[in-house]
Amino acid sequence: MKRIGLLILMGLTFLSFSMAFGQEVYKWVDERGTVHFTDDLGQVPEKYRTRIIKEKPLGEPDSSPTTSPPSMIPPKPKRENNVAPDSAPSEKDILGRGEEWWKAKMNEWNEKLMTARRSYETAYSEWKAKENELEASKFKPDSLKRKLKADIKVLEAKAKDWEKQMEEAKNMLENVLPKQARDDQANPEWLKIDK
Image (cartoon, rainbow, N blue to C red; front, side, top):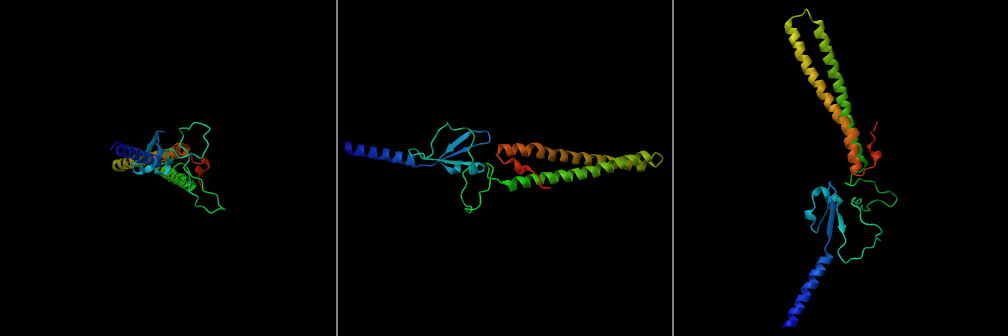
């Protein structure tokens, strides 16, 4: 009886070790640099699934020689080799976005900047023209002066709104997108705007 119990215990121990050694572990790094591990792919947040690294099960030999301790910088994700042998694989950032995505983003914000600049210049010149018209209307009826003052307020608000949009677009082009590109390890050449 003791032998059967011992055999069952040994069998269960062996089974649990074999399950632990054969299980895949997923590793990912969040935006704060915290490293996470799980054995359930469903536990990995959707936005990090492109950055997961499958860890080798315990006991499986590692074919790559380890010469230095692991760094806290997440490695670039491995890419599938679905490209023709003659063509080089396209470069991507750590989120899997390529040159087209970054150029499109830069061109989009550059277009917003150009639109805001043109609209600001138009609203500003109309605003100043109305102010000049108001100054020239000293001997005109008060109703006309009130209308001109109301028009001036509207044009001034429009000009200030377009100026804010212009500053936002400039900030995106000069600060936000370049910082995001550095954080996501994108090629800085991708941030050049198409002329």
